[in-house]
Length: 564
Image 1 (cartoon, rainbow, N blue to C red):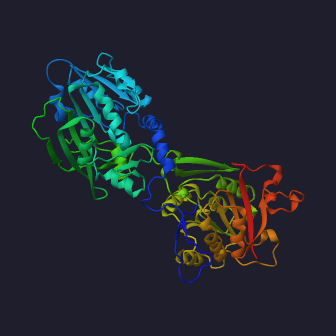
Image 2 (image 1 turned 90 degrees about the vertical axis):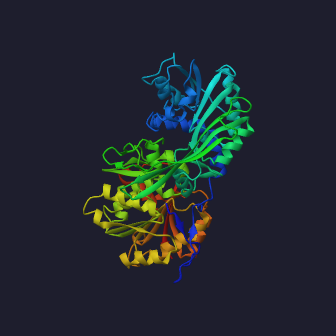
Image 3 (image 1 turned 90 degrees about the horizontal axis):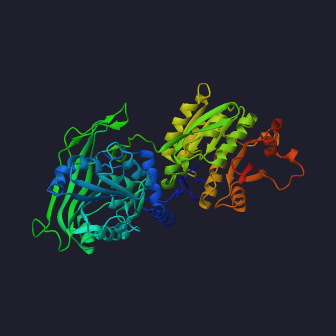
């Protein structure tokens, strides 16, 4: 589908102002999605652990160095690990401190199960339970005022900032008056925050949604201090930790930032000084290089206290053991196409519809596969084809020349990969990809340089979904379609074929725009007039050899236009 175009129907010598079909940057997450992420937070984290298992965070062996004095000492220490995940905090703790007993909870049942099935799990050292820290009372699982230490490591950031107080009040119920909260989480200015800001995934101030639906808040020292003080905690220690990470292959140096703190109940534990010990730690630079063979990251060369993981690799370098894209297979008669598109898991945060394969493209490709004469020997242009380009690739099998276009450069990059992966010579040489924003004079002229005689067939699948884009679409098609030839039958005349599901654009609006740009509707499918189906150009495509064409959705429509 097309990503950005221009608002006017007429295309003059001066380039018209561009129409941005998708939300402009920094508009943030829409209220519908914001509420969905909050309502289904448990589901997204459960899917997270289903996908990553115990591979996302590294085991936190730095705990002994950073907080060892809180765990050591005579007698048993009862520790509550909230948001335990796969146990990356739990198992280093019980290995280092024989007198520590850990209560571990997470609101993802899969995460809790990962802890229970860990090779080092033992019920004499660890007790697990599923718990939503916002709505479930911890004191129903643990005796009130019985916990010596609560560990919160990259946990509170997953909670909506307006509900963080509920979490702190909950843990305070089970924390001893002399107990401590050991805290580590993302800080403002972290590289991951910058990446999410650039992707327009902001929910609220310093609160973002990742591509997989999980969320992350980035703390400032002031916000964190105020939050804990308002809920009855004093600051024992507070540190801003910074880590420079270098990717030699890309010659990039990136900043990882997190806040690390220790809190105690107000009037309870005694601070080591009247004022909190506030520090800023700038760790030595770690050299992190991509391991191409394994598609993961090597260990840092120096011993640093950073939670380096595959997840961090993804956020920093775009490298990970999982991909944002998925491969789908489209089978059409005797051909099979493997198309890489954006995974459904990530489509909810994507502003570009061009990274998906729509039902209309599947239907139109099936029609072309069964009726190659539609494009045989002709020059074909596809508008807003997205990353799939399935119609263009099918057309290349019998057409003389095919140009697949879209306005989204990211979709075009993926389109080029899909074309190369699926087409072989001589068909590959007949298809080229070009960027085309509807109404963009430079783009239109660039396509005319490839074919100055016009195109006999122009295709568009699910490109009519924004009312403001209708006129630029038809105007662009009028600029690029070939002239009529009175010596040809009607079904052989140059045609503009649209396949779509009616969404925000209704049929009268489409017909009005078509008329303004010099097009007339010759045929449509399905047609209310079934008295003479033999006269229908489109119906003949579906009746060949008595076989039905695969119909992915009953709401699909096809409209067949020609120049007046």
